[in-house]
Amino acid sequence: MSQRSGVLAGLADAILSVERVHPVRVAVDGCSAAGKTTLADELAGVLRSRTTREVVRAGIDYFKRAPELRTAYPVESPESYYLDSWDHDAIRERLLVPLGPGGDRRYTTAIRESNGRALAEASVHTAAPDAVLVADGAFLQVPALIDHWDLRIYVDVSFDEVLRRGTARDQAWMTSAAAAAERYRSRYIPGERLYVDQIRPRSRAQIVVDNEDPARPRIARRD
Image 1 (cartoon, rainbow, N blue to C red):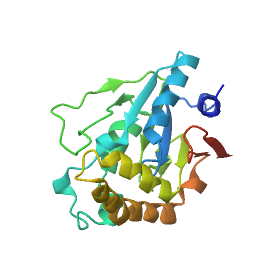
Image 2: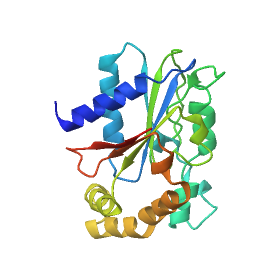
Image 3: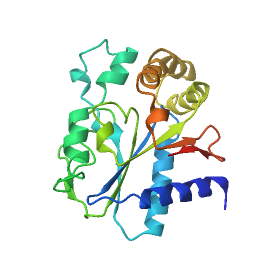
Image 4: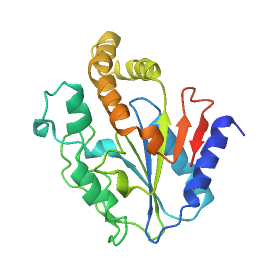
């Protein structure tokens, strides 16, 4: 078994040990390009191989606010990215609360495309009572959301690695690698530093995964 497979198995065991009378809601939190989505996808696959329980995957990027509604801060500012890009009310009311205590289990995994364009119709599903939600995204432990997770996993990488990975990834849709790097330096990383400094997500998460080397991640802390 590879080190990554072992970490995924450990995370799956931790999730399946959480007992609730409603679906278990798991946050896979972390900065841009930390490897959250890949980890969450792989983790969902491991869970499906280990249990007959329903596993729901959700990407919080599909709950972004429409660009024209992001008016609280200058649109290219770190504050806009951190505080004004995601619709926390929709995340709570359409995904987390329905799957939580007393919820009707009728949930939606997307209200918009990842670019903020509204979906023509947001599909509504009904989760099994013992379902497991694995949701990945940035800023998942902000005050508006933190109490609605049953297990919080933080995927930890250095900001140098965020810059390196993010530049390599985002240059495909931006004009150049230099433009992508500048966007990370001026907007994404400063916004994520605000989150890290204010919320201290590593300390609040029950599990921290060091993903600096994706081939050899390790569980750095587990409460």
